[in-house]
Image (cartoon, rainbow, N blue to C red; front, top):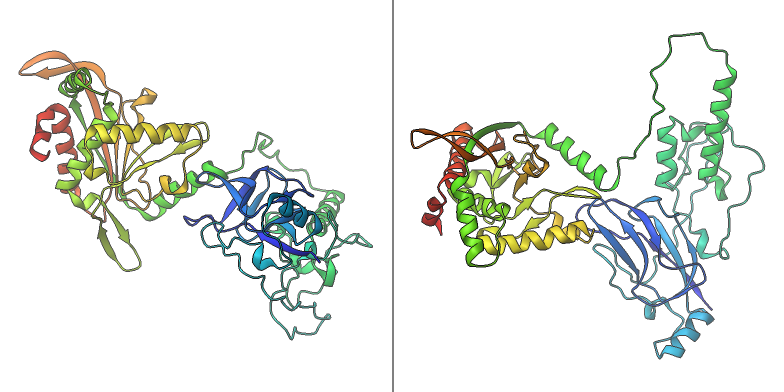
Length: 460
């Protein structure tokens, strides 16, 4: 006899709490093997194919393409030990059996195990009006897909749910985070909604019906003429995925970090000449790679800027290794890949790693691990044709170096006015980790290396 198991969206690591369904890789009725990818999702970090730990027949899918699901929400159900799955495994020489123990890999993604199915949890029935609940404060998750046929749907409500049908005492019979979010967005009190699901469970259709009823009531009430409201009918773009992650991180940086910025113009003529000589003698090295190598040398002299702040412990944590992030603009938005152990690399090695990560970023193939763990960020906004900026620190780092475009400008060189290749450098730093003297010393050292690359020879 087949056993129906539910596979939930696993913990994808790096603190991610939700993901958007991009593309289903299986249909209801398909036979899947253990650890076969079943859905492609997009997180705030990267695109990920999620493997299913069970082998069997897909009986249900949850979430249309484009739907955002929280970690722990059901993805699909699989009938394990069904005749179709058994026949398929027998034909391929794979294992067979009726129990879930032989059909689960036990190895999906970070933080998600696939052992034996958990014992069935006791349901909580809503208490009668005026009577306090005598059981748990929250209803147990409903797993209708385990006992219902494929594509089963909830019983149709006998009447449209209305506000005020349920007294505001007792637990709220809602298990779906998406239903709660929908109600919160429309200012709807779920305690005033009658649920049409089993044991009074509030479904999405119940919330949508209540919202429509409230809108109709509001439209029927005559309104007093008032001044025209501003036009808000423009295009609305959801803050989710990469854009949402960037917005949250930058907002957090502004809230938590007391930042300051200092800048200086530098004559990059000698740096460009040194790069031309290096490229003539061997593999090509980018300007960004040379600036990255200069940053690692500067951080060795000013380690205060390669640190983070533990606000709860009221401590500054100076980091031993330099994991250098660099800003990269892609079709999916701004991302910051990280060059691991940049302090152990020369300019050529850093350049090769930057090129590899940039290509992966443009193809949308960066993993969450390649986008996290940075200790200092280099931002070359000169590629956009601008001279200066005041970068926002990549939280929880302590500083970011910004580099403008390198352009010919009038410059006093050896006491005479000349046309030189000039660049503006800006450093935004966390004022908790150091004062202006340290930040200015760091920036001045970087500028000296740009103007006289031979200065770097002392640290090579």
